[in-house]
Length: 403
Image 1: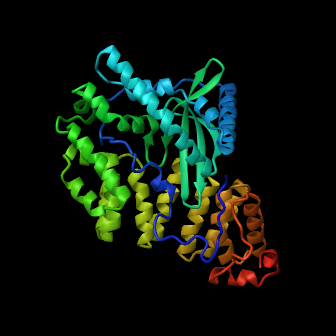
Image 2: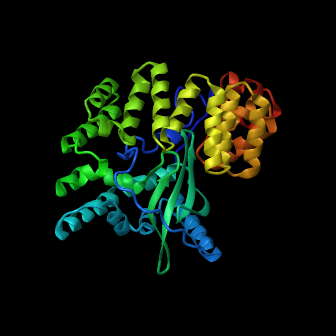
Image 3: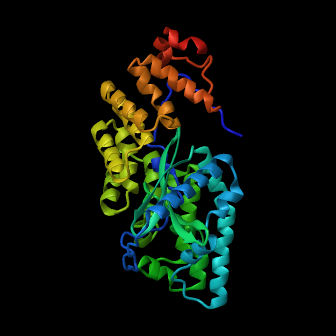
């Protein structure tokens, strides 16, 4: 069943997280990634992919998008090579063959439970297959997921099969993490129990013990319960080797942002962004800079992300909304028009762009976006054009169907 949203009053009012899922997707499940990997691997060779392979991968991505939108969970599951992912999750585990097989089966069973929920989540976030591309020696299918809460850019890593392709990992380009890393964290205590040296090799330190992993799980639990003081207290007791991991630091910073001083929050974010090579903390700074109304810094970070990924209608619309908050209405309108040309059927652009169109008094464009959104079946505008933001539009002939 599709969700139905009603926009009224201030359409895009936010108290936090202007970047939405640029920040929140899988933050609590972010992996315990060390600043410097304990075991370095040689870089992947860059295989050549033919035009036919790229076209085939694009077709695979389009088919996967259709299955997501239709809620065809079995078809989505069939597109993933869960055995290959389980193999990758357990890589480096030193134990006997029987226990290794059991660990892989545990990883596989976890995927069978978690992936359907992930697909349902993606379905509700308006999946959009963007294109096939090659990066770091892998063939990827780029997807964008976006709704009123924000945007995610995710690359599905593909491996060839006898009759096409299967997904063997995915990479969240905002957080700099992969599905394999997240799945490994989920069963990390079990892996550590099978191989006493696993944690020391993973973290490059003997300081991390199984009890510390349990304490990390409690941090995430306390965060979900909103007990931010407990998170801050628990974080202070962890060994430095765990404090200096991406996943734990993100939980700490999330609690600090809720319970701490805003200046301290921003300072700690800036320190983390300088320490960690992954983009996670740089895009948490989008939230921090937005809250403190540092518009130029917010826009600069968004521009950095767009340059690193690609021009995208949803990302451009997010940028336009920051420009609007900064009072730069003409610039915001120009960015929304750029997004309209790039992807005329982008739902996020029509939804989030309404603020800009209303401020710029682009009444025909406002009407066109309302009509587009109502056709999705998720939005109802009749009788909902309330508040100061809509006041002038209600006086225009374009608003007549919704008064």
